[in-house]
Image (cartoon, rainbow, N blue to C red):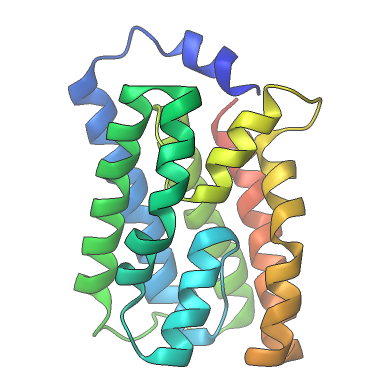
Length: 199
């Protein structure tokens, strides 16, 4: 669905309700990242994926990179998508960073590849889709995808998948071929869930 159509369809939703759903969406993403994906060396795409890679290489918490790397995209989003989008997105990123920090000490709830791929990807996609549906974004590549989807026939999920292919290729050299394949499979589940959750 095009972002501007989605935005029109949800214009009536109050700010408190938007914040509540974005809070829940960001928390789902943090759960997916910390309790399923990261500790199994499975990455997400976009700025989140780059943040996971940098966190792995430097041992600095992923939340720091999420805030740092997303900042330029917020300025891009502000220019085209407005004040409300930026405020809701900043709120979502802060919640995501907080919960990734809070959940960091906890072990993965499963090391089964199927559970990691389908549950992790499903929670990730549902969380991201919820945030987009209620007017925000958790990742700079989502901002680009939202802008491009309004000017093309591609969905947000398809554009995000295209942007992220090179990140999964990079994961081969950092985590290994098996983990990169798991990451790609997880993101495929996530992006299908994103498109489903914003219909």
